[in-house]
Amino acid sequence: MKSADVKERDQKYILGTYARNDLCIEKGSGATCWSPEGKKYIDFSSGIGVNSLGYSDTGWVDAVMQQLKNIQHTSNLFYTSPCGELAEMLVSRTGYKKVFFCNSGAEANEGAIKTARKYSSQKYGDGRYEIITLKDSFHGRTMATITATGQEGYHKYFNPFVEGFEYAIANDTDDLLSKVSEKTCAIMVEFVQGEGGVNNLKQSFVTAIYELCKEKDILFLADEVQTGVGRTGKLFAYEHYGITPDLVTMAKGLGAGLPIGGILFGEKCEGVLQPGDHGTTFGGNPAVCAGGIEVLKRIDEAFLSEVSEKGAYLRSKLLQMEGVAAVTGLGLMLGVAPKEKDAKAVVKNALEAGLIALTAKDKIRLLPPLNITIEELEEGLAILEAALK
Ligand SMILES: *Cc1c(COP(=O)(O)O)cnc(C)c1O
Image (cartoon, rainbow, N blue to C red):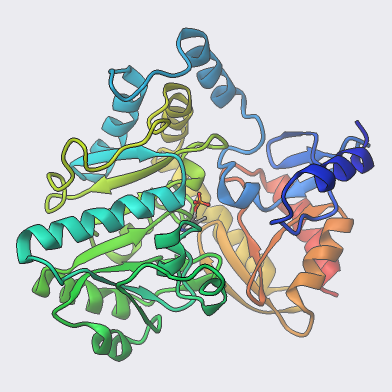
């Protein structure tokens, strides 16, 4: 089917919640993909940080296919091996105690929010339920997670929103402290805000809130849906800050293209949710977990060093470009602030010239596959440089 026909049918039948770009992707390999007409694109977006091993990676396809041939699904009323194996890998590499699998980032955050509230209500009784999140954060699209999202634009039309969220200014410890009260049960942060503009949290800010959390028995929730599973050059971004959050959520890159979300539970929280408190039909699906196992096998220490090296290389090349004012982010999650040009216009021009990139607020956002080759990086950078001119 031609691009024009795919587009026309999509616009006729798919609910219009996405402002799709004018590109239909038919097939791909590594960080390169093609339209039905055979036009080639370098992809610096990985489907928003999801295709961590690029398009249709052979090892990942084989792992998923092999599991599909055994069984594709059973309910969570029975045991299957892959979800336990994936959980064991996560636990042994992080030191966390338990894992819960779900299907998306929003769902992982919902589970973490429920855990924090139950932990607090059991220990301190009713009324200690508030969760402080940061302005410009993004935590998902469900009712609780859009409420948690610290952006006014999301807080309209759907009233009433969920009670008990407060918003503090990122990297402003005083502002955060002013929001803490006897009602506070948790603080939830992204170490690098993704959708909110690729904003890094400062070490001093993270240390201050971490110490506060420990002192007041407030839970520290890390939303690593975008930063997790190797994206920043560490398995999880909290490792950069030398802290151990009570709960860590993940999703995007873990499945390498199939839907999965997860929550890591530390010592304080491992026993909070009991049978009947939480669940999901699809979470821990064996085929999806088989893909996740392949991702974790591949993302070993050597692979993570390469992510850091490629990130540093990309950053230095970007900083040498005339049109670039600043580069933010960590590892292969980078935000590029153009000097004069509008980020959206740059991304649009780049797409026409064969590079897929994203925006986040007024920045160009780059999330290439973690195993992107230097050749693909060079090719994409050349297109981006031209689009910035
Ligand atoms: C994408 C994202 C989410 C939401 O994930 P979904 O899978 O779309 O529900 C939540 N938090 C962060 C930090 C994200 O980047």
